[in-house]
Structure formats: structure tokens, C-alpha cells
Image 1 (tube, rainbow, N blue to C red):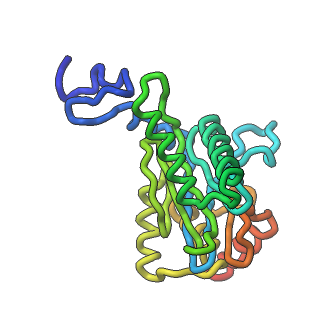
Image 2: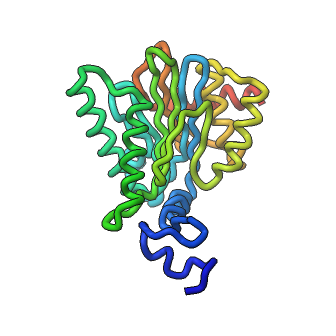
Length: 246
């Protein structure tokens, strides 16, 4: 087996290559970009926002049944990017973990605890030969009573972290560069500015003008800490505000 090639080392998830890489885990990251979706999460002064594209692959599908935004508990939700079936499996597990935590301790699971738990589970998938890593990435948002708005992300390798703004998917590199520049200019956004910044960032990196049916946005804020998905009417208002400003 020639050293320095992937030959044989990508057959098993538990075997390191001579360069110290786990190819199957790297392939899981590539699977996230397979659908061509890009999602962005960011936080303002008193709110956190997630946005993703809404692609209905078939004319016969009911568009209201196609979503990448999921509520996990009353004030905690996420956007999933990557393989849809894997995403649903991870959301189901996250809901189970959140429900168990609430039953055991009598209060809702904090977003960092849930993200850590989901990352720990993903990490176990990278060290057992009888499992495969999930080809999806989760961006969680919640409004924490002590810490304010929170954005967390976890990936198939089991890494997790809190973010001011982050993105995942096909155009994540471009989106992260764009968000970095914007945060350097203005490090804090109001609720409206945060929603508009999320739309503008996604629109810029994809070089596309959106209709309300092309995107999905979910928010949590100080005034309304419950996780909720914006309606088409609310999306139209924000899109109109961006058009007027430009």
C-alpha cells in the first residue's frame, strides 16, 4: 500500500492514514455540501437569527412540508444543513436529550449543554466501526437568561463552539469572510438589523435576489425568547426594507 495516498485508509472510519487523517470523517464534511445549500447563523445585541435556502426539489411536493428549521424545545431551535435524513435523525436525538434534561432537572436545557451533548454523540460516531458519521451540521440558537442571545454550531467530527456569526454549507467560506468584514465594521446589531444582515449576507454570497419563498428564517429575541420561524409576510417586510435601503 503506497504511503501518502488514500489507498485503503478511507475504507474504515477507525483507521488513521500515515498523515494522521481520518478520511471518512473528511468525506462526511463533503457530504454536507452535496445539496448545494448554505445556512447562516448570527447574533445581535438582543436576538439571534438563522437563515437558510428553501429549495423545493419537485413541483409535486407540498412546499410547507419542506423545511430545514427545527424547534428542539420551546426556546431552542436549529437549522440543519446537509443530508436531510441524517439531519432529521440528529434533530430527533436532540429533542430526546432536551426532553430528558427538562424531566430530570426541571428546567430547559441550555443551548451550550445541548450542543456539547450532540457533539459528544457525533464524536463517538467517529471512533466506532459499526457506525458512520452523520453527513450534516447543526447551528443552534437560543436566548439565554444569563448570557443573552447564543449561536452554537456542531459538525460531524464532534467539534462544537459558540459564535458571533457563522455559516455552513456550499458557500460557507465566502459567507464567513463576508460576515467577518461586517462584524469588524459594526460589532452589534439590533433585531431588525440582524435579520436584514442575515438576508443580505446569504444574498451576496449566492449572488441571488430572494423572494420570501426562497428562504427560511428563524429568530429568538429578548422580547420573545421562544424559537419561531418568520412568516412569509414578515419576510416580505424585511426584503422590502432591504430593497428600499439599496
